[in-house]
Image (tube, rainbow, N blue to C red):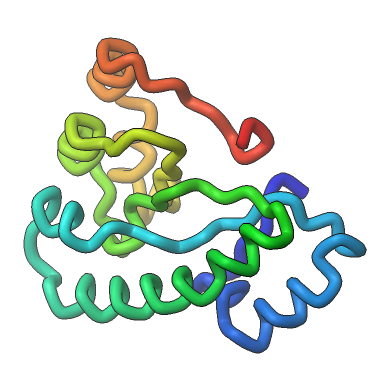
Length: 148
């Protein structure tokens, strides 16, 4: 297992999270998605869907704040930020390009659901030569959870 995460981020629901933490060692949990997408930065990167983004940011920030000390005590690694959570299938090349230009220092995850049909915009963003060129020019290192 690369890292723990759950559909709709259910792994951070207080009941599920408590169960995971009770036997984190036995379950081999070393990395987990901590769903924290910085809302103020998101406001500068994306437009529209303000109510959706604000409500989800509030929920994610609360759950992350509750989980972060537990993860630290148990030595469970996570990225500092998870971008794209507040986009709800609207991660596209323009969003990724704006994000890369303002990416804070440290480890971050880009959350998306790339596919060839419904979320092709997300796949296109991830395989874009322009995005790859920007990653290279900014000196951004692409890693996976095992590298944390």
